[in-house]
Amino acid sequence: MTLAITILAVHAAIILFNVFGLVAVPLGAIRRWRFVRVRWWRVLHIVSLAAVAAQAIFGRACILTIWQAALPGAAENSTPLIMGWVNRVIYWPLPVWVFAAFYLLVFCYALALLWLVPPARRGTATPP
Image 1: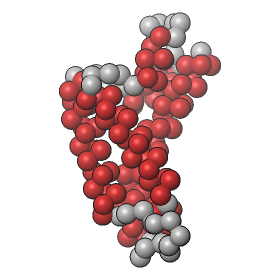
Image 2 (image 1 turned 90 degrees about the horizontal axis):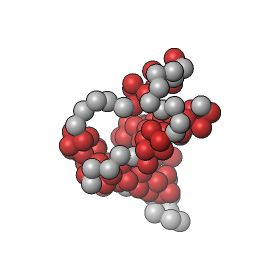
Image 3 (image 1 turned 45 degrees about the vertical axis):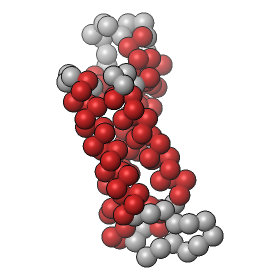
Image 4 (image 1 turned 60 degrees about the horizontal axis):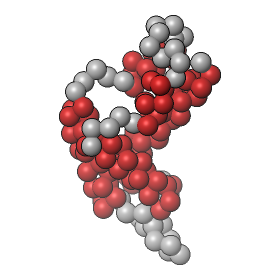
């Protein structure tokens, strides 16, 4: 059970990181937050979203979802209350094509943010 909770926590953290970036970048550009222009953070965000979109486009489930489903007792309905709630928030009973379209749209939005709010160049001051 501990491994299942760990996998779920990592999955939730990645989701929160991706959603946070999608909101923080445009808001940070307006509020002039420097961290939204940090190159390594923006690259990590784009790579994470690209991985999610690519998996969905190719009809593959996230590796964390596969690992969690493969754990012993995953099919049983004996999950703790919090874990069950988080599972319902993360895993929606929709066709794969819906996720593929949604994740591709989100990835395109992130690419647009990369263009609209570019990361600072190395050795230069943070852009206004």
